[in-house]
Image (cartoon, rainbow, N blue to C red):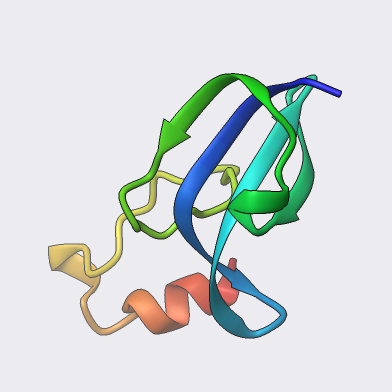
Length: 82
């Protein structure tokens, strides 16, 4: 099996823990999360440089702490509400 994309050398929040892993993508979907050594070959490989990989987000543009409404929300309450 050859995947479309492998993101290697990344960190993920997985099962409540921050782990070093690789992410395999095929057909636009994440199909595997594993150690890099057990990841199948891929048409494209991206080295994340040890950075955190996050899932895609829907409606990501938000405006916390709008100057007129600083009393209403902050990062913690805004992300919890999402």
